[in-house]
Length: 257
Image: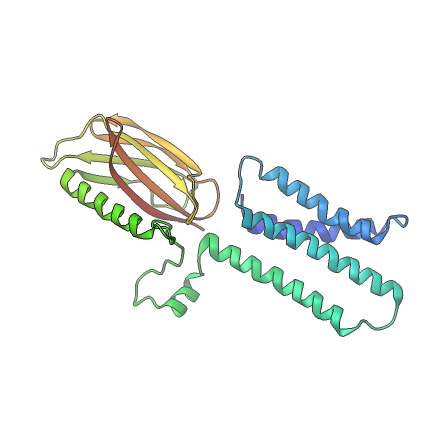
């Protein structure tokens, strides 16, 4: 589900519902505003059942829908009173309009990062690709030092393991991708009996949104069909275990325009 579509689609629904409510003369303006902001919000809550986008995204939808309804209510009351509108209400309306655009921009950057031309100009690329999304690998909190130590220990274990791992199928622009993982030992022979899985989550998210077990297709070859739920930036973590012991862990960023 695309957050930009739900945000601006709901905003358009608020405007349409408020205009329709104006055709009913017995309907007070304040009730028109409540219905215009509440109905799209209820519809949005129904859409995100089982697909929780995060409290920050939900809060933005609530504030934008009801702020728009409040501005429409204020315009209606000033129009009924007649005369010129004071500069203070105009400034308040401009503030809410600018806030909506600003939050939409933050949502875009959070999901897809900066647009490539802006990213190259702002961050500098030196001829390479620019990735402005947060990787989400090491948390920035009081346990950061412990997490870094854990990452170094994991890298040391992987080096001692001596597995040669080749992953294909993650690159592309489609929602569904056929992923294949080939595992060989240090002598070049296939490694059987590996428990392989992919974990899909948003950058910075605490929990994985999707866990995909990879079936053993051939000797040392594991695969499955990975389907991305929505556009934006995703982190795909490959985990390889044996006898329920995690031996290999690698995270890759995917960007779906």
